[in-house]
Length: 435
Image (cartoon, rainbow, N blue to C red; front, side):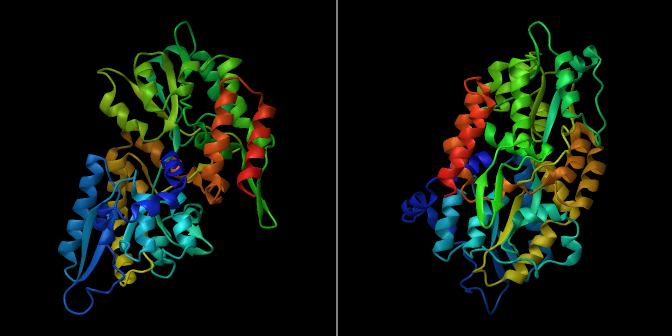
């Protein structure tokens, strides 16, 4: 999801200004809950802007809103459908115009700017301790800005490995348990075992490499962004070089990674994966949905847990629910959030999106209801490895990624520049963006 965010945020204020006069924004502007128009007689009315888009997720969202409304006649919630591709600029216009929805669905990496501008309510005192205790502090940190909790993190996306079970069996590679994946060394050694005539052990889809590299860099405590004395800069040390070097080695030294996958997205690798050209695909835990829906009859696949360096830590960019600071009914909105995201409901929402719930009990319920099949045991266990990453807290990250990091990483993975040259370009780019 971070890839979408970066594209949307480039020149967002220019785009938002242009959109301000578009009639189509009237529907969103009408979602405002801060005017107090519904105070007095009748039920409290809240508008909930949702970005759910998959069929099962859409139904789960709408069913939960309908159930709430039936059980709470004094607080009525109107479901409003949003779209990931346009919501950022629409929200910017709505917030600046004072007509934002009461409840906003978005993601941690994108709500920071709205939070810092005072558009989102601090939920710290509006949510119960029991509710807050279900989610680990590292996940709450992703939605905490200047000491204020301005979003409830509820869905996570971890990086796992999807593998062809028959090819693993044929090569004598055992599937690790859900709570204990391979180390990077083991992953690379297994890729070697799975490489042979006409097939590669792994396909790294690196069309948009930056988020993946910085995400997995946390395996080796690679931060990339360092803040000292209030100034942030990009630094490239051994920890930051570890993941790019290992991927590069798989491409050009051991030749266990397919070079044709470099320009692909995760979904682009699926035909070759199903055809046996690649034995393993590192990617999002949500890829499991496409396995279920698209894999040919008789195709056996398994989910390998996150790969381990010095840790299995990864960057968490959870989807979030926020309350507008201008909402006249923040307390009631928080009540709805606790209901909407109780363990059973959160598990249902995660299942609909093939993602990981942030809540501990929701994780347990999801594994119980699915029997851990289709990789749900691995997905649930991976939640413990997800935490806030330095790049998520840097305002200049989207520009650095677009202008400097992505082109430099693409050059490096294409074997056109050295690892040291990659580091130089990343540092120099940071000097331009973080000045």
